[in-house]
Image 1 (spheres, rainbow, N blue to C red):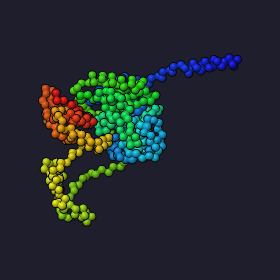
Image 2: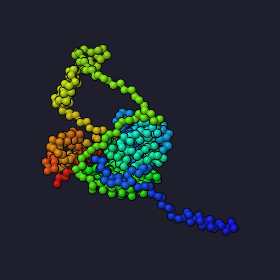
Image 3: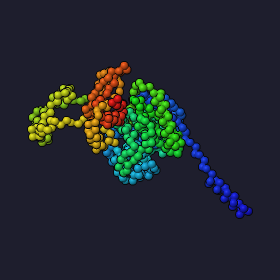
Length: 472
């Protein structure tokens, strides 16, 4: 009898193993389309359903990191010691080693571009001491933004009970990322970056290359979440953010998000007024036990006017310093006068005869850029400048349009500000204001094609509208 059952068991085993696999049930679908300029929703589907966000979580990890940098809790050049917990995170990862020291800037690049889980955990532990404490801070920041249905349990987004968000909340976060930290936002459009240990490639590079105007933001995938994406694109001054949860594949997700962005651009008015989201309050004081860490602040109730230092006299410790500056003049003891003097057009600079160099008078100082970004290395800046100068001998019939304004004064003011901010790329360009029926257009003319394109790309990186104007 047993021998007769053997063929039956063999046939059953082969039938089970050779049958085509049953399709895995797709993760729940949700989507939101928002006008980033004013937060208006143009489309939503299951927008408030709490779902697994996957690596979209890292947007909040990075947002809190940018906030901590701004508030001097930590710096981009701070060395982070990788913990056993961070090193043990599953892929995608940078393959950090326990005890390894690495600068925060490289962890940020790896988390934003490669979506490295070990880098995200290391960031959270460096800022809050533990990943649990950092997750609580992430949740508090989310609530302050209006992300009322989001709870974070970790810094990377791998599936965990209670770690949930919604398509609406993630769209709100994406909008904040764009407008609250524009100096860092260009990181999300990079196809690759140096993360010290290795070069990392953007998980969103296919969509960035395929969709016109796309410049971010973040992908996410786990089995529980499906293929998620928060994407942003700008065209002609209009900016749309689209979020999708529950895609069945990268290709299907990218196709659907492209449709959502197209829907947003079709419905968005070109004249919508920019209304930036309100910055969430800065709060990193809650400890792991739910209490508040109280910091005693002894505010200065009265600010005394400093007394003028007697001219020609100095205390003993300061004597060596003053001896090196024989021509130092003491400013008047009047703060208002000092401010007016410092901001006036005529500034007298005194140089001692022993250090004077006639060639210094013909050397123009370089303007300091208005914003700094950790993704732009000084060497790259110098290379860009060299290319621009070599190309200056070409046809200078190109221009750029940086927008339309309600008054000539406003247009001229913006042109001047842009000229000062981008002296390298806009050097030699002519500022023009053209009166139109609907307003005043601000333009830079007299540029080569390369310098015009470079200037536009640099302005776009700072969230400033810019359109190339060809010679025709």
